[in-house]
Length: 348
Image (tube, rainbow, N blue to C red; front, side, top):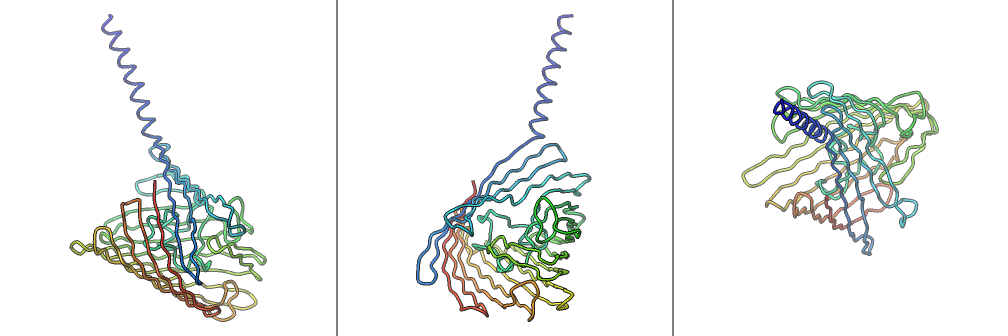
């Protein structure tokens, strides 16, 4: 009898330990951080600057339910000596079947490869900063809403995102009109290192809507109701050639802005990045940006702008990178500018 009793007690203890272990494994929370600092020479003077500090949290709440949170601390556009806190992503994800999931919260809009892949950890950026397509306010950076997502489906590793959410000019708590933004994005990965994607974004901006560009600090006001559609194509390629590795990223977005007063206007924004890993740690690269508008643009600033970047990326480790860049910008409504920037980016 005693042996049976001891056996029951031991089995009960083992059961409790296994249950605790399963709960601990189910709720695995990771907290990571990213930061960057840089110095740049422009207009005859040397400047020092802090970029962003990014707090990145992920948690597996259950086997199917997970959480992702990303909060960024960066300098304020209104007062460069102060800092702003911004919740960039806050997502609850439920994997309801296979590689299919439903997500709700604040997302980076999956409208192009860069916005869907490179978030705020600049240690992972191939260049120092984002392409001009972001600083010019063309890409809708965030969407607060709900989405369906599928990843790595079939032999070509097909993926999709269908997102419905608050539109441009809206906040994270409510939409400013009855229209919802819609994003539909698809991609395939037919071979290792190759990703081909396409997307469509549509929204309706009410007259008087104010849209704040997160990266330039400039606000845009819709002077009339605008139907906006953005179609994007992208190609990302990372090929190993012996000890060398070639990197290529090309994206182009066509924006259609239609208003009752001025009809339909178009803008075309593109960039191409190419890099070659000449050693395990050193990657020389170039990037060319080109943004063109039609006259009488009803939403964007209607001036064409181009940029050329040549740089070197030195990877001390996976989470410590040095970058040195020269950038020339040709702005058709302002004087040309040249800038040399050195950045240190880390993850921790």
